[in-house]
Amino acid sequence: DRLRVQLGDMRELPFDNGEFDGALSVAAMDHLRSEDIPRALAETARILKPGGEFLFVTINSDFWVKFAFPTAIHGHGYWGWKANEDLWRGRMTSAGFDVVEVGARPATMYVLAKKRARAASR
Image (cartoon, rainbow, N blue to C red; front, top):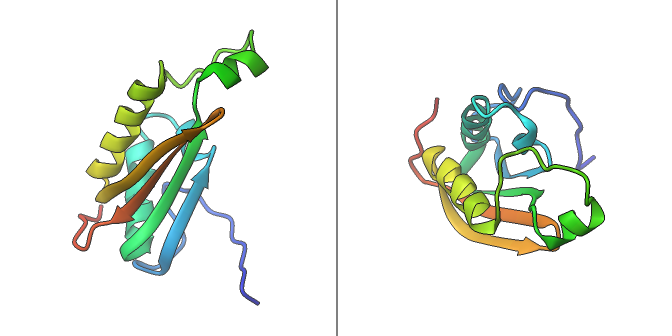
């Protein structure tokens, strides 16, 4: 009774404005076409209450990914930790979030962001 699963397109979420305290994207939003990512981030901001938190997690092309998948190419255009961090920090800021924390774990990068009190909705 505390969980509801609902399918939807992250570029057009089927929820009301300010309906949630938090949102999470793990290895999902980063697989959209680059032109669709700003819309998905704007939708995430729209459904969050002011001050709501968003945890974004993606693959980080670090030693661990290269070790585990030596012949695989991580095709998101992330060429190292700093480029990946700057890319997602900028996207979050443009979508109306304040970045609280950015970090990495083996093979993973995360961004914890908080919706600004008066974020522009699209």
